[in-house]
Image (cartoon, one colour):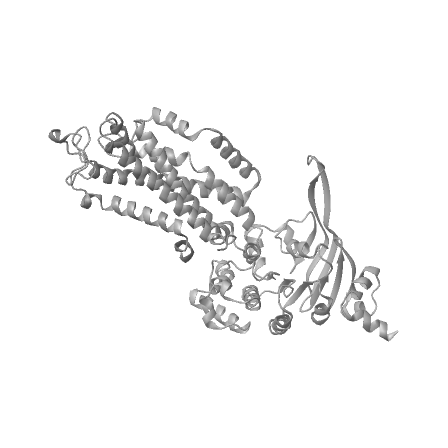
Length: 272
Length: 270
């Protein structure tokens, strides 16, 4: 942790992710207005003291919608990455531990999945399902586990030849004990790093889907569909596009910086 | 035959390597070529040989950590190569190993107490209290303190880590311990302490050792019998004194002559 804080970029990443997380968590307490309250007398007001980020085409307060949108966007990110990590760790562990034909099968499955452009796969799948926040989480999760699988497999392949694993085997340890007590705890570092980096890309994918109208459905706010609302008014209501754009930019940047900072700090090969 | 604790006969292990420009060719590397050894109860058999002669492969094959291509390993009247699953696990309690590299052989994410107690846990020996007591007893016996139980391996020096490794193997009260170059990664001053500890424990617990080493000075001190390995074969086998005083094979003579200081001494005698 000390080494993470010693890296200025990682500090920025940590600060950004913590701030967005807290804003999302306490959205109901912070938000000055009901994010869904329509007020036709206050349409498209520019940012002012009473509406910090202005109002949208239906008179809703953009700042409040941004806060509640952060909840949705981050939740999609976390849950989707959680699903991807669980699948990835399980398949990677099986692949790296048992090797043989199971390994070949799983690795070819990874190759097949990686050869399909993920965003178009998600688009195609979502088109068949009703677009809801749960479907999006699951679909993003089910299409982004390949990186983790490869990482965990590679870690297991190198760790299983180490003497402490051999010694546990010589003690009589079974497969489950070897995997969960010896191999997995020693592969945590790359898993954590890829999880943090994965959140950034999941947030981006969700925003993209919502922008195209295939993600979170209105009136529920997400950064992506606030952007969509804004594109109709972009010539005279810049605030509708600017703030969600900046929010997405900084969140993705924050998680990427944090992820790379963690990687540098936790990797014993990089010394500072 | 009751005084033979482990008898391995005609062990063969071959590694396949891809060769040729596109990897279609196969090159066979014989790591073990018809190796037979017997270990007498309560004694030490040393395996000596240069690096790459198959010593470590032999150790791992005896423990069934690597599958054998052919041959049998009789341990206490059971053929280990034919065992699997729970039966093999049960035998492992009596057949332990001390590894070469004290920095790689301890799980960096487990406390010393967990490392030493893991075998007891696996074999379900005693309740939690009993296990802790045994772990403490063993740690103190190998020269560590009770406070070390909550420390992680990186807090120890190489010699202390090797003591942890010895405690881990011996807490199960094994009959036979395979020591794979147990001191070659340690400072010379520490080596003597660890060797002495191993000798003391052998007498106290009635252990038999298979002692793998490339250092002939250590072997002379530790072993009762010696088997010299070269290119996966055992070229000479016998009592320590007879091998050191009158080596029969040219390879053994070369090996003995390579001991620092020995050549000079023999030269001055002539």
